[in-house]
Amino acid sequence: MHNAMFYPAGSARCLLVQLEFSAEEVRMRNANNEVLHTIPLSQLNPTPKLAATRREVMLPNIGLLSFEPTPELDSLIYSSGKKQWASTLESSYQGIAISLLLVPLCLFIVFKYIIPLAAERFAEVIPYSAINLASIHTLKALDQGMLQPSELTLSEQQTIQSNWQRTVSQLTFDNAYYTLRFRKSESLGANAFALPNGTIVVTDEFIQLIESRQDLLQAVLLHEIGHVEHHHSMRLISQSLFSSLVIDYFFTDVSGLIDAFAGISTTLVQNQFSSELEWEADNFALKQMKTAALDTEAFALALEKLMKTIPKESNVDSWLQTHPLLRKRIANARAVQD
Image (cartoon, rainbow, N blue to C red):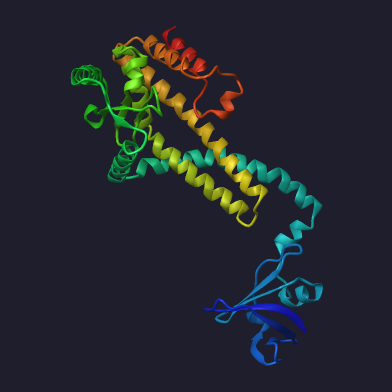
């Protein structure tokens, strides 16, 4: 007789039972030694065994059995002759060594290449109606939190709008798709950002930082359009989702240290993805500026002004920030002029 925990199907109860095996079947008895079920051995559906973890056996239309492993029970439950690959690999030093090499390599390939590619393809098929709805709700949420109404005069806003329309009319993308919105934000400070539907928000603080210079503003706006044209927001969301799914798949039953690892890994991966997308948006802006016969030095100057508002950067920052180092981006902008 062997002790086990029995979870009846369709119930939240847990019963302590005893299992009595014969050559063809197993009898399940309760604490009163009454036979609850008699199940043919051929109908037992055990989960793969792994080291000293509790064994679980599915009983079709009856429930689930769970018990501590013993050599005798293992020989009875896993007597079908099926190869237990997980158990074999777990007990093989060669298998462990190969796994230590292959698992990190596979994860590197998945995070570095497969997830970004899958996210890029996924972002391209999301319908605009869903993107637009999400963007509208995002702006509403920001207006209720970090953003306040702009204090720019109507004349200042109209000047920026007209200069912007004059610039985008010379370019290949649909200028009707993009709209400018002006806001004030003490928490965001000097900033400009694009929502996935083409809405670009510019803060009063940023206009003040660049001293209302239209060439610097247009350079930054083209950078933000680069994010939209390349579906960066949707790609970031997809990458975050896919990364979480992969981590959950590999480490779903492990807690503690693995939970911490999952959070840190997602953050670091996200930062590296963002860095790549910033470079892509930079190069898009510089290319569009050349098409519109704008001086690309304006983009470098805008970044220099932004650089004065943040702490001094070091090379270590490139691993911790979501954006590439500003000094490297400035150098890249000036290299285009050569």
